[in-house]
Image (cartoon, rainbow, N blue to C red; front, side, top):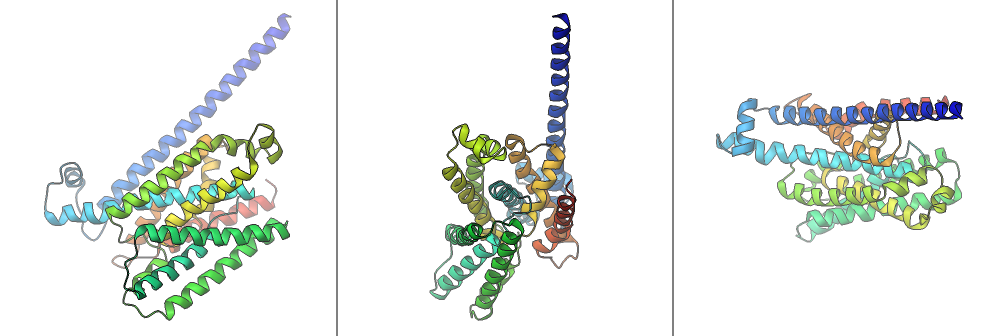
Length: 355
């Protein structure tokens, strides 16, 4: 009996030690993400064609006092852009995580599966149609149009998935849909005759420039409400990761759950596309990096981690896009591709090697 008690004590001690180690890792990674978020925010506000010292930035942020030019630069240009980059980066990463959960494949993402391209195509159509009728295009209209385009692409992918069981072939089908939607968008833009089409063309390349506080308000509410709904699904997501049959056995309504994943991921991706255009590789690269950093796939940890990680990643890429060849500005997808594509290649190589 004493031997059994001793083994039980050893097991409990080992369990508590492992639990403490795991929690310490979570805290360290979240602390690192928070520090990176703060540092990138400060650097973004401080960097640009007009250099503003950090003490004056702090003064302007908290008191709005200083030269009119510097106050306008920070409050009307840089701060809205930084906040939107953070919100949309987090949304895009979280959308990728939901799609990867749905398709049970780490390569699935809104850009690769053609979802962003479908959203871009419908937004371009609606925008040009409304401009042709001398109507204004509101942010809500853009989000709804992008959401419908996202659902259209997802619907096609789901229809193909019933005929194709090979995930690699399904991904190729998604890539082809992306090419088709991009070609249609380029065709529409080429033959459109409006003075605002230049702005639409720049938007179609992906950019966080020109953001306003109205954009931050609408985008923030949409993304944060969706984020809260995703957090409410963390327990079903954890069960689904262990297998569809296990999830059913603990009472998860699989049909409703799968629809919820698609709707929420499409809404997140649509919001990003509506405001910033299509942005590549973020939805694949960031969830992969976050899962490896935490060493777990636990949704309660990965969902907020992915959101913050996506925010930091896009803020960093936006900083590079602004400053690399200033005063010229790179498209955000150019920068995210440079950093994200090698990560995706590494994922595929590691997956191929069976590690």
